[in-house]
Image 1 (tube, rainbow, N blue to C red):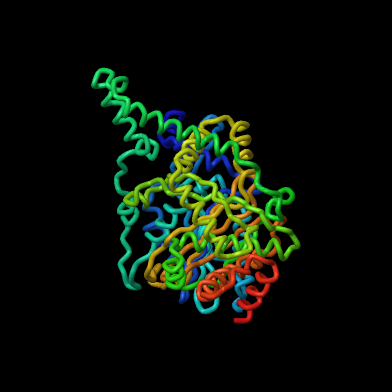
Image 2: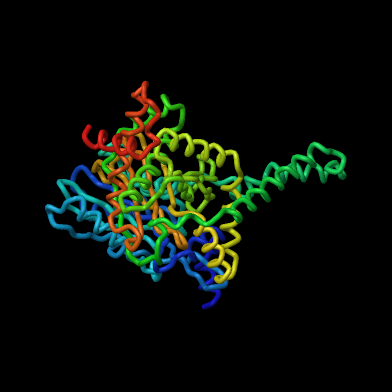
Length: 483
């Protein structure tokens, strides 16, 4: 029997093990997504689609098993009646009612006796349907899961369903992430060894390798020596077990791109700077003095080649991004975010944290908790920005109207900011611990106004630079509200 059980299992990658073990009652390690549809979607058609395409990924037919000493993937036979089910809302339910339902599901653990994923279909909502997806982070990172969800869709309403869709989304890997990251150095070492000590005779090669090692050591020192994030309302008090989800009305992506060209920065810079502005406005509304305050966001950075974007598993690192919520001037706030992003792109912080996550996955539980607590104290939020498809997609023949998702937080972090582009529009969402942020809509609703502020300041060529004062900031806020 023991031999049979062993053949029914396969080892879990160490990084995936780390995400499996990060789960706690106050921070469930689920990625939660919401898809809204332009027309009704039937439960039978959805189950057929999930059975054919989603389960074409063999991993989703397995459940994670953690023995304490090691973690495994165990083969099962998923019951689609349990994994794909209906959820109910009143026929005339509004956006707030939908947000409450998503919040409830985001706060409800998945059943660890089964594969850790579930779909909830609201068949009739505002003339269409809504699909809420919950998938544990140990299966894959956000980029891969977005691609998985896209593999369920088609570019046309009448496209044929292919049972082997999942296979086409998994090109053969040429090696693990760490192997690819270390490949140049490894090749250099092999060449030097084969040359009979050429490393000792080649000061250029020796200096290059020493520099790479010192840069990684420097990044580790920087990460470990980061101060704890300031004690704002976003970090006040212990976490609870309830999450609140909110999202804003989508914005035209073309407007943000045009703004980026004028300001000579990336779309990502603008969106994250506007998120910082929304967080600043909320803190001021609850009476906090935020002038001069900077908080950090942990931002996932993809480490897999684009041709492997559809592979499951977690292949990303984390970087600590400064969010200058204490900067009153939206343009200067954007400049600081853009500069922070440029510095992070030049660093090896993402590769370092990926390696640390792998090490955490191998460490004893007590050490895992210590490492998690150490790093989560240094950030206030998790921030993700994922570019989605540029054209409308169809799932089981029904057009996907809007698309939103949230990644989990870890340790003592109680807030997540999510930005996703789809079909020419930008979707901004927030998930937050209910004890710390009772009304996340108050933040989500500010996002569009922050984009408007940047646009207004850019258009005002003769602006006198007085936006740095509190009175000028309030004036600009009132103008945007009434425009």
